Length: 167
Image (cartoon, rainbow, N blue to C red; front, side):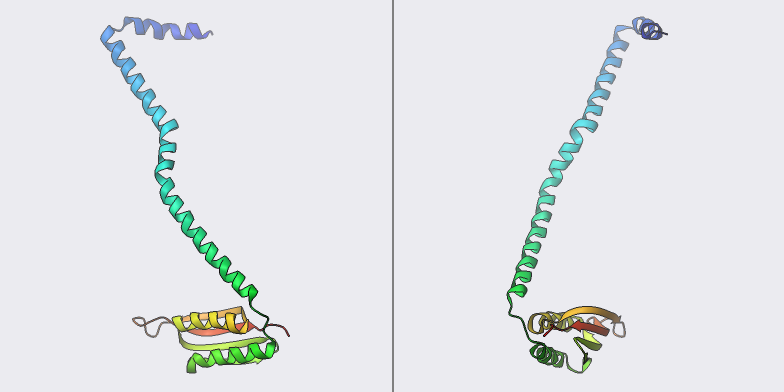
């Protein structure tokens, strides 16, 4: 069957319509075509342009954070190597700053720090200090948030295993 034969009934119906109906159908087709053009070709790029500024700010913030982390890593790499004995002394001194909430034991090149009701802020500061001053790297952490005082600041129980620098 030819296309012309298939379209013949539609053409006959089209010619049977009045001028007003043909104009309305053409207008509706044009409106439908413009809507389709908008949804398929124009709306996605417009949406992308609207979101571009927010995405740029987000990416800039991520880039700034990455630069800060890079600077920290370079500062850590630039620090002189600490001997094992000096690292152990520095780590013991830093554990004493946590007070009675922390106890440390050393076996070989690993130090195990047991924590009981240690405030989260103090723990974070201590970890940074242990890394910077003693060169101790966390190997293992088993921490549980102590929920005995839900209204107060967060406190942690558990243990941390730190690897001391080699001799």
